[in-house]
Amino acid sequence: MAEDDKKKIGLARLRASCGWGKVQKDLDYCVQRDGMEAIRKAIFSENRYEHLMSLSADHPRKVSYAAKPIHKHDSERRTKVTLYRYITKWFPEMVEGISMGESQMEAFVARFWASLLNGQDLESMFKVISGQDIVRTFRNEVGGRSCMTGDGSKFTQVYADNPDKVQMLIFDDGNMKARAVMWKIGDTTLVDRVYPNGGYHLDPIAKYCAEQGWIQRSNNHLPDYSPVPFDDGKIYDILLDRSKTDYMPFLDSFHYGFKHGDGTTFTLSNERDGECNLQFDSQHGRYSGGYPCECCGESIPDGEDYRDPNGDYWCSCCWSDNWSSCDNCGESVHNDDHCIVEPCQDEATYVCEYCLDDTTSCCDSCGCSRPNDETQSVVINTHGSEETVCNNCMEDITECSGCGELFRDDLLTSPCPGCENQYCNPCVEAH
Image (cartoon, rainbow, N blue to C red; front, side):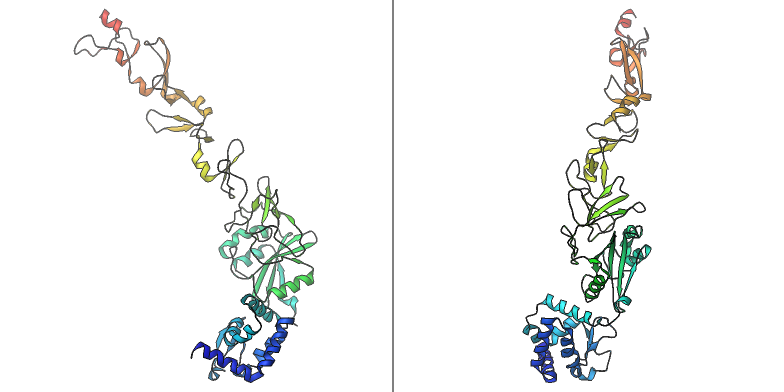
């Protein structure tokens, strides 16, 4: 059967069961007054004998209906869909007649589910947890998956380490669960972004928070702006201890801040002002925006900064391009300041200026810096003064067989063919 034919049959059934005028009247009331009873009556009660539509026993927050009368009591053949899908599929004229857009329809359906909780004991649907229970809640993905659930839960340990300042609100009505981090600042309790971000649970959570006098976040959007708003419009700061973990979680509301001293304590804020130079936006336990690189000026992610001897910060890329370690003392040396030491046998090494003075000598013959134990001070008769010569260059210096003085090989000669002795010029003449 064509989709259009199915819709026509559904509309005919609806008109036959309760009359189009009554449906339109009920829906007008529903939209104008946000009354859920109207749509419940129009679709659940009036159309009951056409589809025998009801809440699904197998799939929470879905409805179950029989597309064909023969399937009314066959649970395996009954169709399970969301209420949104059921309404838009079988009653499109109802939606078009009240000019309800997709987002309005989704909000309308969410309020409908929330209305089913009216009259129930809200207190029994909520609990507040703290400490390691928060980490376990993230690990077990209570309230759905996010970047901090599952394996990412290890990044949330800082919540457990601050039980006097961080708690978590859990919603559980038996069909679904939701979570929200709570912040304690003096006598004020702030309720952070709710997970999942959309659904019928938002209404009872808002109602419960209002009853407790807690302040909620104004929306469930990503924190891509400043300040991140709470319902009272205020800016809040909170001091958090991070001495027992190396990680910081992704923070939805207290998205900005700065660290004190060695980074074991942070001040968090829902506003990025001049002092808050950090942004807690990493899905891997880090944070960004700490310090600008001395070389390129870009913000350096947490854990990837390097400090030079002057205390300036460098990003990892610029650091590897411009700095190296002294092979003797291990201190960091800028490439413009390090010195090359070329041992006579081994590969060249790099040392700082201090180690160069203490551990090496410059060969007067070849001009290279050599380790002290590979050089010696000798008097070469060519100049008549003491010189520092490396082992390699000493191979080109020989003792005159006549006077015993040292001369470079090119200044020594043999007085007769076949003679192995080498003589300086004066000794050759005497010989």
